[in-house]
Amino acid sequence: MKTALLQLTSSDDPKENLGIVRKMMQQAADQGAGFVLTPEVTNCVSSSRDQQRAVLAMQEDDATLAGLRDEAARLGLWLLIGSLALKTSDADGRFANRSFLVAPDGEIQAWYDKIHMFDVQVSEAETYKESAGFRPGERAVLADAGFARIGLTVCYDIRFPHLHRTLAQAGAQILTVPAAFSPVTGAAHWEPLLRARAIETGCYVLAPAQTGLHPSSTGGTRRTYGHSMVISPWGDVMADAGTSPGITFVDLDMDAVAQARARVPALTHDRKFTAPDV
Image (cartoon, rainbow, N blue to C red; front, side, top):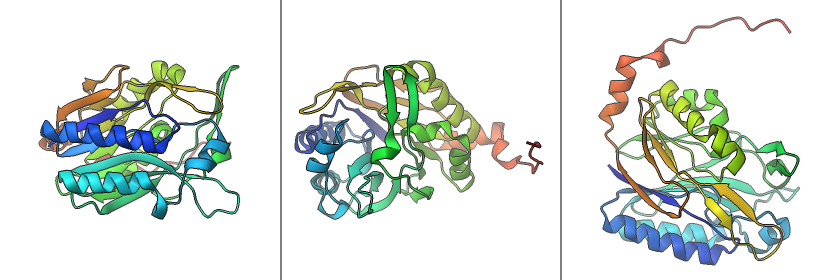
C-alpha cells in the first residue's frame, strides 16, 4: 500500500487549514497514495482557549471533518485524520482530541479520543496542561481497513507501551501516532519512542507530525518538532520528513509484520508476575 504522511504547520484558522490539507491530499493521490495520514490537531493549533471556543465545532457540525470526508471519497482513498480538536457537550466545556479513520467512500470507519493528556513541565519556560482544555478518552480502538488492521493512538500516548501492546495483541498491524510534539521532547525522545513501540509490537508505526512555528491570530505562538516518521516492524526508520511541511511517501508491505513477529514472537511470551511491594 502506497502511503503518504502529510507534515503540516497548521494555524489557528480551521478554514485555512482545510484548504491546505485538501490540496495535499490531491497531490498524494496524484502520486498513487491509497492511504493518507494527517497530524494531530489538523484543524487548529492554538494555545488560546478563547480562540478554540470561537472556531471549534461539535463533531456533527465540524467543517474540517466534513470536508476531509468528502475529499477522501472524491479521491477514493483511506484517510487517517490524525486528530481534530472538537467541542463536546461536557459540562466543564472541555474539548475532545479525536482521531478518525475514514474509508474510501467517505464514511467514518473508526474514531478514537486521545487517552493520555500532555500535562508536563518541559522546562521553566515551557509548561503544558492539556487536561485543562481537553477531556481524556477511555477506550482503545482497533479498526479494520481491509489492507491492514490499524490501532489508533495520538501523540503523548506513545509514552505508554501497554496501550500499543494491547492493540498489537488484539490484531493491529499498523499503529498510528499523529503528533504535535514539543521541540525539546521531540529532539530527545521522538525517534527512540517510535522505534521502541515498533520493536515491541512488530507493527508498522506511522507518525505524521506538525512542524515549525504555527501562525496565530490571538494569544501566544506554538512551535512543534516535525520529523514525521515511518518505522518498520523490525524497528528501522523508513522515512523521516525533517522539519519542512510536505508529503512523505512510503510503500507498506504487510508481510513484513508477520516476518518480524516470526523472528521475535514476543507478543506471545507474556507471563503473569507479582507486582513489587510498595
